[in-house]
Length: 487
Image (cartoon, rainbow, N blue to C red):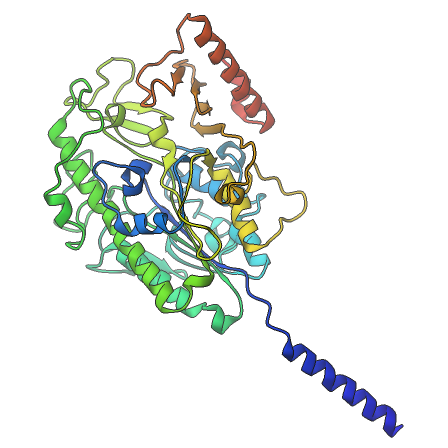
């Protein structure tokens, strides 16, 4: 009996010694997913923007992956964010336009979310900043949609200074502080609190900036300068370069263009962009100083692109004319130009993952927002719940030159507009009843100035019909309700 007991003890102790001698299994990477608001790809210095100055983001791109052709699948905030978090197209998510403040509904509760899947796989999940996917009912709020913690704007945010921020269900006004500085500060606090060295779990942090969105509300004593919008006030740390900038207009020959107004707007916009770049420098320094950088992926994108003088417009999916009288010089549209131009959809996109990417890498293939959900899951080593449908594919093979034959086609939506884009041609169909369809030869007309939809040239007609068939097939496949109004 004693011999059996002694033998059992020895076996038990040997098992403990064996387990202690084995190295601990490394944790999956932390993931910091940063989303700017209204930042066009052209606003990134490493993308070649003539007025751009983004040294911290450019440093990230030079040490990681720069994706030159990353597109949103929606042309305004809520639909594109719904696509990003669900991996589905806007018409599938229940979010097809900007969700008004205090409006019922939001992102479909039937769809799994990226933070929800990561949370179920052992990640601590946090959202700092803009939500804008439903706030009227608790079921649509971030903490019911996969985020364990939330500090930010349930709606869309309002201003660049003295922001009112919800911190775990309670409102706080950061009086006299600049919005991007405040959001970055909260993000760093959460990363310190959720450091895997203390928690034993990796974290997924979504940092959704307000900038460079123009203000829709202003601190007392500040007056809007144009259509109730301005990017000011902004931090003195971000203004010196832009005060002396020799502004280059993107389309200076556009008819009746209000050039002085546009120059002022460009200066303000890029000052706002610099506030993001400066805070990205703070964020990267924090990760380094807290020994988090080696096992953290940092992704930077915007929720969609932006127009600022391109094609005579400013804003996004519903562009406003920058003409002296605020109207369409061609007389086709009114004061608003609904659009799915490339500049409205193309976003800056950078992935920084030290030790896992032979940087620098420049990806020219077309990537869209449906691709980020499967990409992040592969980074984290997570699998999807059964019977989950995603529309995109992981882009990790592109980082290593192992993508093979990549599908470079893009499908995007905005209100009654639908577009299908290849690397050579692009069609936009208007389902509103106005039938203002568009077709562009992107190889010869990358700025989309010459609409060829009505051309009778046989080669053009062939391309138009081919793209129209592809677009309608995509709409049918995803059960887009507008397919019933097929032109």
